[in-house]
Image (cartoon, rainbow, N blue to C red; front, side, top):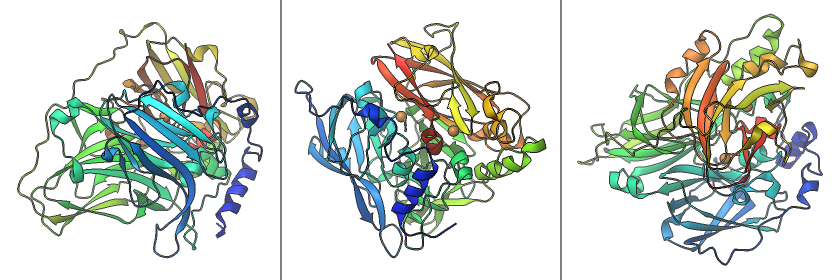
Length: 530
Ligand code: C2O
Ligand code: CU
Ligand code: CU
């Protein structure tokens, strides 16, 4: 690796290597774009926020500050708690209540186009941050939506055409929390006992600048950094008291998958997934957390010694093994990029103070509307999401992303519940790759966190195409299948069936791999809901 302190130059290198041209494909189209420039007078907002994306110098490590892209927020109207600043480069936490009407004035002060997506939120097409709505420097986009989601943890991030990965990497992300009445009745740990924990991996130059070099190998696996940041800071230490906490964990990394567990072997108690609270807490030895996934964890420090530590780690797990033959060489690297050999320390909870009472973990959390295959709108039909690869590019349903394009099979009737089958397509492997060394091996050997915009879904089944591998065995006990999800980790050789409602809103809604390098390579498509 080279050590170039000029971050700009690195991004230009990346630009030259990818299909990203200076002219930005998709922006020819954007010239005829309809952007929402002005507020709608009939939308009576309860909360108004100004959110600006700009270049900033932020202290992350000791020494020189790091140049990042940062969301700055300003509360214009609404409860004071709606906006919560974090130290570090992440945007402010947006704290919403179900039923609130929210207006966000988004200003782009970056030297490149940008658009913001409210990941996990159920909002209309024009408010969803589709890349076709990107704005240029100096422009404004007004987002207006009602918070329909239940209590839980979502997030917002840049979603710019072919620039999502570098923009999120440079800092354009923040958390969204939502509360509702059902949650408030539970009296879960709140205030200082409710801790946000955004995990990201980054690499730095000697001058403390973000390094984002992408060679062919890194483009195929996704970028992996060598430094873990929590809430935008290094060596995270969180002082706690001897009582129960709620920890909202987001994997905000571009491509790294974590196997989260406590260092003393305490099992992980999950109380929420992507889409909000579970029906009842789930206890697992560890939790797999792929990019964009959230898990909320209940951890009780009662009875622990003041002065002691409990560390959240990412545990070792095995990458997919080579499929043999001529693929070995290309595969070995892939495998090692996705497995994790050693233990990585994520965040150290330091028991700093004792306290006599603590809330008890509720046995029941919130009731859940169970979707069933029979209850789907068209029980005989399954919508496919076929993961494939052609010409060294990942595809979905045999196609690469094309701004407003959708296939017949990507048309969804509004107000329906669809059964969707996500699988690795080994047939559509043709083109230049047939029989070649890279194609099928790379595809089959990679896990893909598949994300669908719009409403949260439920996991119906997971099926392995062959016998379980030691790689699968090393992650399988950390997959939570019971809650509402918007992102599901699809392991190599695995098929996942989900049930997803498409209610209220018509238009184009994205589905894509949330390995952000894969997404930028075109592993993204539209559903057209009508
Ligand atoms: Cu978090 Cu379409 O993304
Ligand atoms: Cu999303
Ligand atoms: Cu992927």
